[in-house]
Amino acid sequence: MSADPAAADAASADPASFELLPGAITSPVVLHVPHSSRRIPVPVRAGITLDDAALERELDHITDAHTAELAEQASRAAGVTPWRFVNRLSRLVVDPERFPDEREEMRAVGMGAVYTRTTHGAPLRPADADPAELIERCFRPYAEAMTAAVADRLAVTGRAVVIDVHSYPTARLPYELHGGGPRPPVCLGTDAFHTPAGLVERARKAFEGVGTVGIDSPFSGAYVPLRFHGKDPRVTSLMVEIRRDTYMSEPGGPAGPGLGRLAAALGALVDAVSR
Image 1 (cartoon, helix red, strand yellow):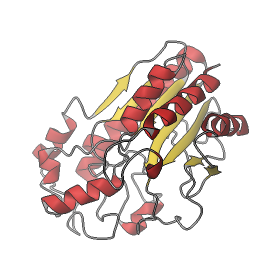
Image 2 (cartoon, one colour):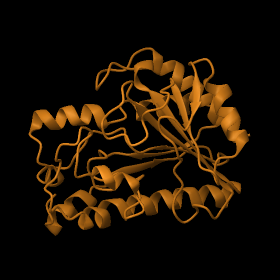
Image 3 (tube, helix red, strand yellow):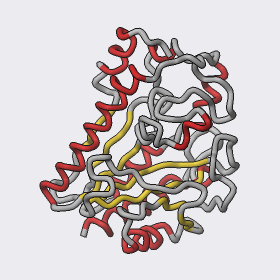
Image 4 (cartoon, helix red, strand yellow):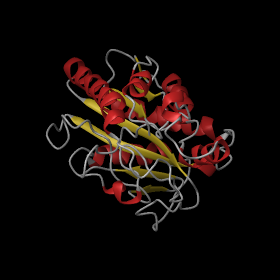
């Protein structure tokens, strides 16, 4: 990664780096889509050591392909339109769902808020790359905007429901720290404080037609902005991880007919938690 402030400014100044798409004023739901984009601004690309072909392969593996489209279709299917917060940059720029400091366990495999290693353990950035500029210029504005989106739902509706939309590969990738367990078609990631049992049960019911619905395997946790994390029970959250073979050609191919079925299920979940 280049530590050139001009390069970081170029990445942060892009007004399309993330987007809040308004829903119904009465909806408490924010569909969060953090990992769907493959876009890497030119100045950030200059700090990545992979050649173009290797970078495309890495993007195939690391991108939650078509999840922005999934959230869009689900929003159209829902009776009460949810709000959507969509990352328009690749997670290879910054990963907005990581802790930006030593609390992040994925730093052990070079995948903290700013990745230094690939999904297969190869170098992604130079060993002496300083993440500070990208954290300041990209990570923090994203976190602040997502915090504001959740705060707005709290102010208007008295609660906020974050549904975190992800996908994951059928076969375990080397970077996965806890990938040895079951890999069901749908994995629900939970947080002990912010994921009530009723939210899990509504999700199970919504996705039961897709296939087996598992809990916290191979991925666990649910995204909550740090201002509210562990503090405000009015903010509830659930991570929805879709196994990629249910809706697309892996690792980075086109979506198939399964996407529509998943969108209908996600839309049903949105309606179930909007009431």
